[in-house]
Length: 402
Image (cartoon, rainbow, N blue to C red; front, side, top):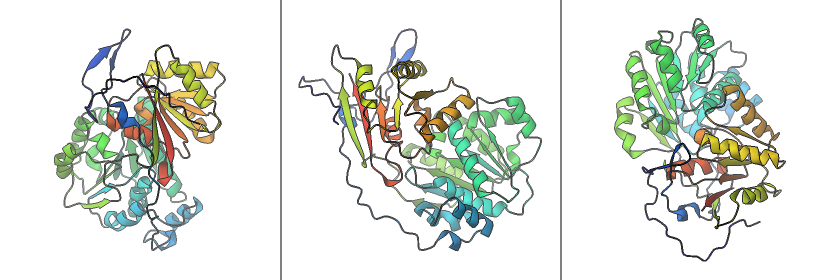
């Protein structure tokens, strides 16, 4: 079913492709950044998925890690390591610094957890490994993956993220753990209170490092790194690599092994991308409703730019009988986790979100991504549409253009 509106009227389109918008525009009582992206960036036919599928020369049972780890992986249904897991395992096991670049959905979390857990077996819980991630949801996912791999190994972890009780975090820190996962803000808050001592950790892992090293998080990361005076190994994983971060990366890593499964410039080439032009007098919401009522739209993420916009779209879809929920920064962590779990399980069809859901989330079988508003910059666009077409599968993305 084709939802692209046909319109022969010539429209003025800018030529600043991929630039970050710096021009704020005031809306009703709130400041909102306006996208300056050329709408033609949102139109692209998917290229055939004709890449050779990677076949590891070894199976899970052949990996040079503890048998109990391999049994847990096999129990989870894994038969062979993915390419990024296969090509980074020995480097991490031998304590090398490492930078791994691989597309979303390729098993990067397992790539660092499997060897790190192997090295932790038999050690006393003493805050050895610190995993820093950009979002609360990704932190929870990493801890869930960790717990599934260490099942039966008597190894514990702690997860520290915003939106949860600081008092509970302080109580948790009274008991040493092997591995700590957290978001930069909460980790640095706990450190400044003297409850978390970065100097205890010997291994630092930055997951989605491109996001962690950008202007929003770089100060916190530098604070953490400076305090980790016993750091012996640093591991960076991401789907993309920003050239302007290379100086900071070089400062973090010492003679690193670099493994690149992708070029580090995610393109979304395997995703069908179309624009939906909304003409004068047309209802954008009515168009959206017609789309999600189509049976092919089985599992849909709709992105809006503001928290208020997310809530407005959710309310309207809900009143129209659509099974829908929302996640954004004003929602409690428990609410956000429940909404995500309901979406993953199929209890809801549509998830409305701000860019909090654009990175790191492992949600399988998302059939469509819809940008209800144009993203502010091309990087946000690529990460949004990357929620569909994961793990080498095709997907569809639509962007509304007024």
